[in-house]
Length: 245
Image 1 (tube, helix red, strand yellow):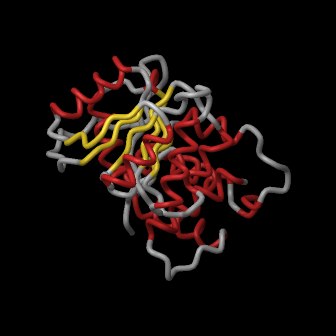
Image 2 (cartoon, helix red, strand yellow):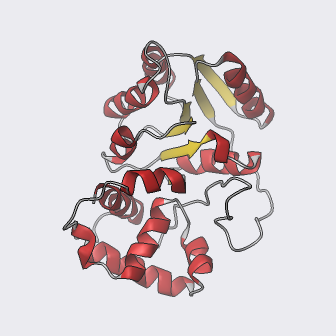
């Protein structure tokens, strides 16, 4: 079974999401990146960080319409997007990211923001392609974790901060379709939504990797996700079902 998840950053005041030491740094492929943030100092700092890591910044923008134009023109490997940008400073970045993915299905987007916008966060996953991340700026504890999340999203994974997941789930409806899942399967699905890999889930739940794979297989079956889909798409669709439940 493919294992497209990733560990998420957490602040120093919250418990770590990994129960094992961080792996040794690995060489990452150079990415072509669009950076969208209206705060010039933050944007330029991010550009410098990414450039120092060997990535190519193909465009920097400060508003939603320009973000859409830049992505359609440059077709980057991933876009890093702030939520609130001009003119209203509410949700322009997220709405622009959704527009981008409607024009370029599966275009990788990593939202990096101080705010959670539940209305749009799940919509980024609605096309079922994955390649979506949503991290909170004040919870990114280490540069290496951010870079790893960026690389994972560019590769097609979903990476959601646990706090984002919690806010998305705060308004769950009664009689949700996940009632067919066991408590353990729901726990595992929540960890999948946070972006954990199968290995990390096994460590977190103190079970074997084969047990995790068995539970994931049961989740796919109970949610009616056909086996003819590849595992990445089934995983994304399972997470989307969880967030929409």
